[in-house]
Image (cartoon, rainbow, N blue to C red; front, side, top):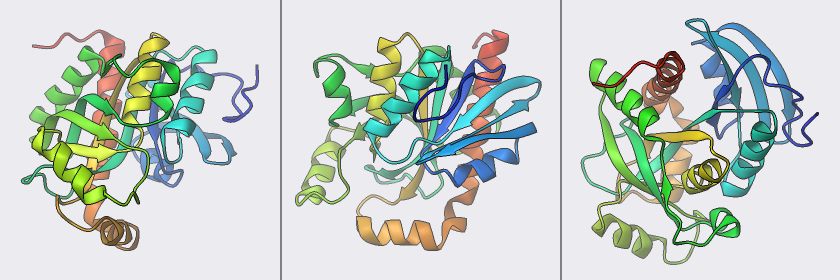
Amino acid sequence: MLQPHIKLDSLHGANSAILPGDPGRLDHIKEYLNDVQELAYNREFRSLSGTYHGVKVIALSTGIGGSSTAIAIEELYALGIKRLIRIGSCGALQPGIAIGDLIIATGAVRDDGTSKAYIDPIFPAVSDFSLIQHCRDYAIEQNWAHHLGIVHSHESFYIDDNAAQEKKWSKTGVLGADMETAALLTVSRLRRIKACSILNNVVVYGQDTAAAINDYVDAAAMCLQGEGREIQLALEAIRRDTAGISQE
């Protein structure tokens, strides 16, 4: 059945998808795939299919925030998706996490509205263990700077006490902040979909949010390496998990 928002009626032979937020990021994803086919583009939901080392995958953009991410997950679930890996950007909440470093989220603080609409806040938002292990293994093999830990998923960039909130969560050891990971992990877990989230750090801890966003938009080349690495990490994790490769 044709899904009303993502405008797909099948997974085109895939059972795994990578989920960037930005529709424009699909152009970068194309560089790592063979047999690329553009599928649909409606609102924030742009999709394509391709193969990575013989494994068929879908890439689907989700836009900004948990609500549109949940829409994408639900409609992919209706089509039979088995694995989802978010590739997005985040702001660091710890010193020592550089621009372009990758954060592999083991779980998320559910400070968003979407995940709470699904289930009580006491329900944990955690990544699939096998997927994060594959991500970690490949990052180590490639000697890429990466960090494993919890991220904080919030509802808005522009709340009045943003600096205080960042300081609060930084004190708990949370690594970074985004707007989608909690919704991804919560909805996927409830739907029995394997999921994890890889985030490219685009904001050094303590940097002004508005200035950082402008820097990222106007000088995206600063983060291009990290973006390429998170794409490769997601694709390789899907390949290994599909092949049933065990972790050491």
